[in-house]
Image (cartoon, rainbow, N blue to C red):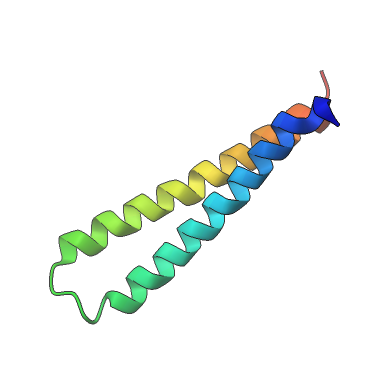
Length: 70
């Protein structure tokens, strides 16, 4: 169990990052009609897309490191 603790932590962090990223994109999309400043919307989408990418990379690394062939 201790052997897989780092991988489990990375997967949990990746899943949380994905959830926050998708939730942020959804919130930003619903705010699009209320915001007149498109620069804010642009940077919000970039931020949350980066969270989604980081979460995906963390999950992929953890699964590959744990179950990958050496």
